[in-house]
Length: 299
Ligand SMILES: C[S@@+](CC[C@H](N)C(=O)[O-])C[C@H]1O[C@@H](n2cnc3c(N)ncnc32)[C@H](O)[C@@H]1O
Image (cartoon, rainbow, N blue to C red; front, side, top):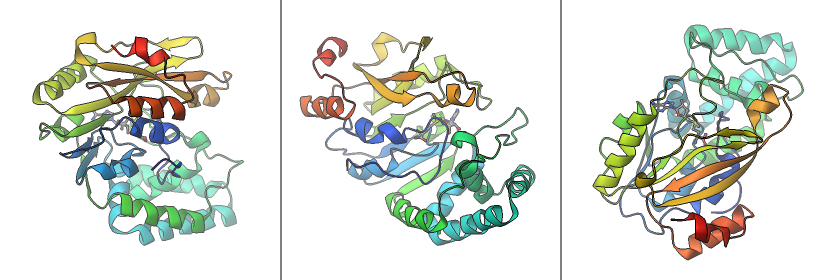
C-alpha cells in the first residue's frame, strides 16, 4: 500500500505524512504479531496488514475509547461527528467550547474525536490537570461528515484484527516474542511537555529496547530530529540499533502554532535490523533522498 491514507483521528506527532515511507522498512514477512505501543493517531496501522494480529496501546484512555468505537461501530462514530459538526455550523464557535467543556467534565471519547478534527492546527493539547485546552480553528470548518463517514468505515476494516489497550508501553510489549514486529513512536525528548504533560523516562525506554533485542523482536523507532536550527539531540545508544536513517517529515506544527516561522524537520529512524536493499531503495525514493547517502549511515 503506497498511497496516502486520510487520517481518521488527527493526533499530535502523527506520522500520517510519512507512514507509507516508514512502512517500506517493515520486514517482507512478519511471522509473528505487530505491536504499536504508542499508537496515538495510528498512522502506521493500515500498513500492518503483513501481520495477522496486532496489539496497540496508549496511556490516554479516551483515545483508546475512540479506537474501539471506530473498530466496532464506525457508523455511530460518523453520526456522532455529524451531530456535533452540524451544531457547530448552525450555532457558531461557542458550540466548540461547549463540546470542549463537556469533554473535560465527562470524558466522552467522541467529544475528543470532534475536538481533534476542529482544533487549531489539529494539535491535541492537554493542560497539567489533563483538560483539553486547544481552541477552535476558526478558518477551517472541520471535515465534511459524508467524507468522514467513508474514512470511518475504511479505517474500521484496517483495525479489525487489532486489540487496543490503555497501558504504559512496557505492559503493551510484555508478551512480545521472537518474530514479532514493533513500531515505536514515543513522545519526543525535544518537544516533550510542550503539547501535553509527559515525564517520559528515556533510560527505562532504552532498557525496553534492549529487552526487545534480547528476545529477538524486530523494532522500528522514529525518534528525535532536527527542526530548523534547533536540534532535538537525544541520542539512542549505539549498541541498541543496527540501522539509522534520516526521515524528512516536512514542517514543525509546534513552530506553526507559536508563529515562530516554519522549520523543516528531519527525524530519525532507528531499526534493530538491516532492511534489504529493495526496502532501502523504496524508502529513499519515497522520502526523496539519494539512497547512496545511506551506505555511510547504516552501520
Ligand atoms: C508521537 S505520538 C504517536 C503518534 C502516532 N504514531 C501517530 O501516527 O499518530 C506518542 C503517543 O505516545 C503516547 N504515550 C506517551 N507516553 C506513553 C507511555 N508511557 N506508554 C504508552 N503511550 C504513551 C501519547 O499519548 C501519544 O499518543
